[in-house]
Structure formats: structure tokens, C-alpha cells
Length: 411
Image (tube, rainbow, N blue to C red; front, top):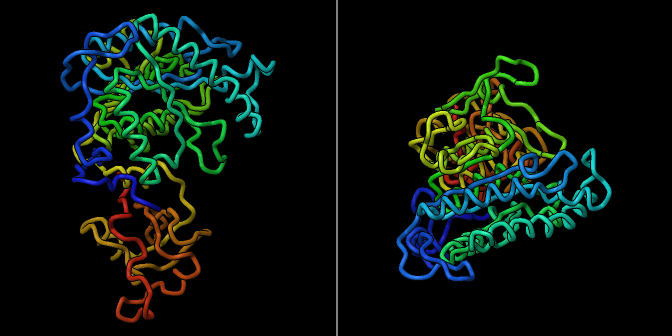
């Protein structure tokens, strides 16, 4: 596993440096007067950045076709945010939903990945065409950016993605981001655009992430089952109790749901980014979200302590291939002192993994408290479990998980 945040030049806690070593934010400028082509011209001052994500259920009608009025509304709100001095990155779902009716597959979402990829390829161009048309009504230019997990995991690709988005914003372009579904490996994919939006918010150093959906925000209960469900206006910490309120996808047209939005909000919080989960059809929703208007939706506050890009990826963006079990002393050392995990503290290993895989770290009572990139394969690790460093065979790595590759998970 390579380090996506290890850029040339000094890196701050969010890993926000450009490919040439200068802070990315220093090169980004707020929208000024635009030319007839929508490219901002003249002197511009640095702008604040926001990521706006809108899901399939908010962009398509009941038949699965793209809802032109819904896209037009979002584009109007993006234009207003830009006029207010924000640099906006849009993350859009809807390629698969848009492709289904074109191919006569409207109704239930197909389950096999090859069909979904083919449908996405058909729907993506149609989706972008609608975005382009409605952004042009505000003299804005949209630019398609298709991302895959490796764009965040591999250092060079991470830097390229960051530089491209930065230059697009500098040119006055509105990046329109989607997962590259058409060629994504089913085993290596995000599966929802909420998580992509949170990672993009970290990548561009956004001040806010706005997740637009078809309900008012996080509710105290499922409104389909409980008519007394009410809006939770503020969340200071996305904990297990809060996650238990979330369910699966709310509609047949969407792949996410409130669970994926809370997971994205957790990523954003650990990036120092405020998240607003709100209804896409609310008038002025983006402006109200940016102004932190009370009752706008559910606001998830950022944490004071943040994680680097690499540790965010390890903690939240990659799946675990197994579990490394440690004793109580090792847990205390990892949590309190920020040390590397050594073979002496390991009491067992579960699963099938090789060197460089992501694994969970659990104590001997089974409680998972950390996650990291392991240096040993499972069989090799079992062979050195409990062995003190001085007694390791010559040439054996001293760290099972180096502290730079280890994240103690939020409680």
C-alpha cells in the first residue's frame, strides 16, 4: 500500500499539498466575473470550498429517468454558492438510474455487476449532458471527473486527482464527480457516492460537505414505520447508537441510504469538515447549509482532532481482510502511546491476508479498537506471535503494523 498523502513538499495534517509542493488552497481562486464561456476572468481572491453531493433518488423520477427540474434546481444553487465566493465540487449519482429506462430496464435495479457497469456506461453521458445544459444556463462549465478507489489509495493517482480538481476550480469549472462504475472492479469499488464525496471533501480541503437526499436529514426513527419521527438537528459524534438509527437504501433507484451518509459524515468529521445532511427539494438548501441556518437538516460537526489522508483511507475507505488479536498490554501501548504493533503483543491472527493488507486489530476479548496495514501474511504472523523483538529470526520485520500505518478507531 502506498502513501497517497506523501506529496513533495511539506504536508499539513490534511495532506493538502499540490503536486509541486505548494499548498493546494493557495492556488485556488474564487469565482469572479465570467466570460461568455463560463471561465472566470480577472483578479480573484482565494475561495472557500464546498462539496455538494446529490443522490439518484433526488435526481430521477419514479420511472428512473433523469428529473430535469431537480438537476436545474441543484445547478441554480451551485451558481448561487459560487456567486457567494465558494468553489463548488458536485458529486452526482444517477448514471445507472439514468441508463435503466434507456435500455428498457426501468423498475428493479439489476443485481449482477456486469449489467450495472453496462447500464452505467449508457447513463453516464446522458447524466452529464443534463448537468452541462443546466450549468450553462448560469454561464458555468461542468467538467466530468470519474474516480475509482485506487485514485485515493495510490499516491501518484491521488496527487493527479487533487491537481486536476484544483486546476478545474482555478479555471472556474464546476467538477462533476462520479464513481467510475463502467470499469470498476466489483471487488475494489466504493459502492456509494457518499463516501466518495467525503474523501473528495478531504482531498480539496472543503469547509463543508452537503449531502442532499430525499428526506429532511437524520430522523429519530424510520418515518415509514413511525409517524412521530423527528429531525435530529445536530450530531457531535457519529457513534454506534446513531448508526443504529440508519437503515439501507431508501428507494429502488439509490444504492445508498442514511447509513452511508452517516459513514461519510464520520469520514468528513475526521477531516475537519462540517457535514450537512438535508433534503434536496428544500428551497435555498445549499445557501442555508453553508450559512449554518438552524433546522436546515442534520449537521454533523467536525472533530478538533483530524486524521491524515492516508489514515483516513485506512480507517474508513478500505475493507479488512482479517483480524490481528493482541493482548491487553499491546492495546494500552497502541492507544495511549501511539506505538507500532510488535510481534510480542500478538496472540493470534484470523482471516486470509498477505503483507500489505488492511486488517482490524482486536483485543483478546474480541473488541476491535484499531485498523492498519499489516507487514506480515497471516501464516508468517502466527509463526512469530508472542515473540519478543530480540528473539525474532534475523531479517524478520520488527513491526507487525507500523505506527504510520495504524489508526486507533474512534470510540
